[in-house]
Length: 131
Image 1 (spheres, rainbow, N blue to C red):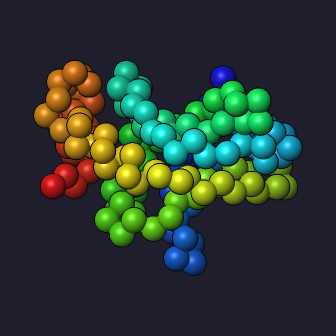
Image 2: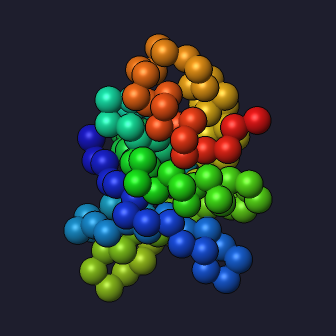
C-alpha cells in the first residue's frame, strides 16, 4: 500500500498545503481521490488520511508528530487543506475532504484515553489545543 509522509505544512495565498515529495508517477497521483477518513497510528505518533486509487485500493497520507504544531495552528481557522505531491517537475493537488472534522473527532477521542497509549495521549495533548 502506498504511503507518504507530509514533510511540512505551508500557508500560501490563504491556502493551506501539506507538501509531499515523491517519485511516484504523475498519472498514479492524479488517480487518487480523497476518502474523507483519518485514522491513527499510535505506534508511529501519526495521523493517517486515506486516499483511494481507481481500483479502490487505499493509500496513506501520513501526518507525523513533527507537523502537528502547524496542524494545530491551521486547525483553528478550518481552512481547506490540500495535499501537494511534488513529483519531478509536476505538482499534483488533492483537497483533503473531511480532514478537519475527522481530526477533531479523533483528538477528542484521544484526550485522556490510554487505549491510544500514554505517549500518544501526551503528545496529542501537548501539540493540540483541545477544548
